[in-house]
Image (spheres, rainbow, N blue to C red):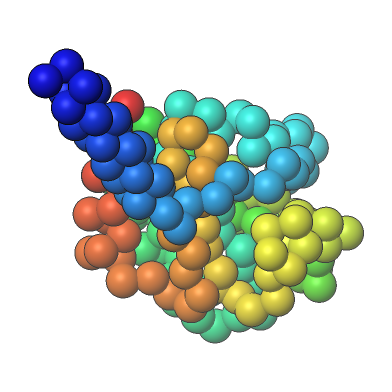
Amino acid sequence: MKRSLYSIAAVLMLAIAGGVVYLNAGRSAAPQSTFVLLDGSRESTADFHGKVTLVNFWATSCTTCIAEMPQIVATYDQFKGKGFDTVAVAMSYDQPSYVVNYSETRKLPFKVAIDNTGAVAKAWGDVQLTPTSYLVDKHGEIVKRYVGAPDFAQLHQLIEKLLAET
């Protein structure tokens, strides 16, 4: 009897462990990288810890990027007080003066970085298509990658779910 209880407990522990692996399937650690922000300060992926963060690779010459930017601003505004952050990373081929002008005239409320060497885009999976966005959970793991504009209703549901996680 005691032996069968241990066997049942072992099977349950394996099932629970397997479930944890299954639930985290598809999540991978966000790459260690440093973002140089427009004000000259730096932020790294380590600074994301404890927050849900959207990392958006974009360019001022990308029409889809420009079209989705108001929705990214609205998403940031909706969730910023709940532990959500956004970093918009301008691609290396983007003119820094264009990025600064766009950010200032549109009053982008979140962090904007310029990836002048292309190292950040390379670290995040060799990003070449814009817009490409990554949603990172509170533990620094990439939960979802979007190439092109995301479905913002679904993105908001996922953000809410991730904000509720401990």
